[in-house]
Length: 246
Length: 58
Image 1: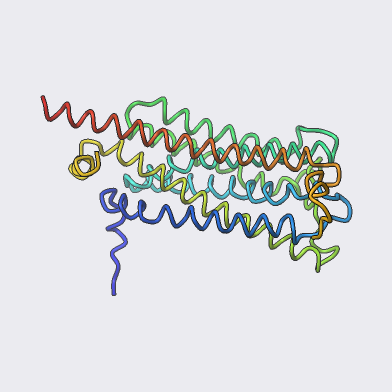
Image 2: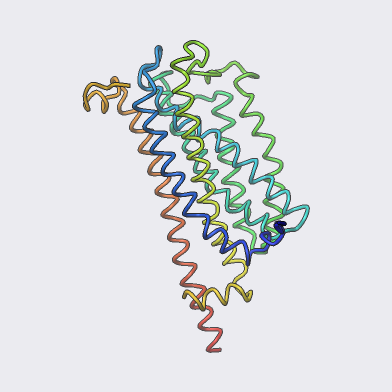
């Protein structure tokens, strides 16, 4: 059996496919969140040094991972759109930006709520925090720039260049704790100190990260469908769709 | 993890404000994003159907 993957690179065929997939991704996200939260609060033990406040890790770390993954994905799609001029690629990049910005904001705010009790400060111009804040500005910059240019193709191109140039920030965030010895520690919950304890902590974190992935896919697919309708509003398939379900 | 009582669970060893604050803000962010998506969907649908109706009349 051969599947023509290029078939799904056309908005007319991708739109209904995405519509069918979205409920599954939301469903998986919900189930994984319940399991993840159960492990985070009822299976994972109290941290020896930080007490209970470390439980913020179960959203902080997955959100921070997502903020970086989504950015790379967004820059990748935007780059593909720039090189290949494929309609769907640029739409995917647009659809990912708000979700990525949301996760970046969550990573920063949960970091502040953890920093206050752990370090005595909500915020510090530490290398990792500052580069993560720059990531939020990159997302906002990308969204503002593409929204400010009326011509869709030019907006896509300008946005793609911004996204690609900004991608250099992602390795900076990732390695910041190694390159600069500032406030944010490499691993606040040590995974090597007590392996039997750490396993459930790590498991909770990974399941929450998986839940975040499912949510991000569902949200981005929902958004890309709206972008498709908007951009292809004069095409036959959108007209037919509106006639069917007004 | 055995909390012993619900009040132990809610106080989170005296760090309840920070733990629950972080979780509540995250929840609020997710609800906000889903709300914006739903509103966008509604307004776009209405606008596009109106445009379609107008173009037919014209």
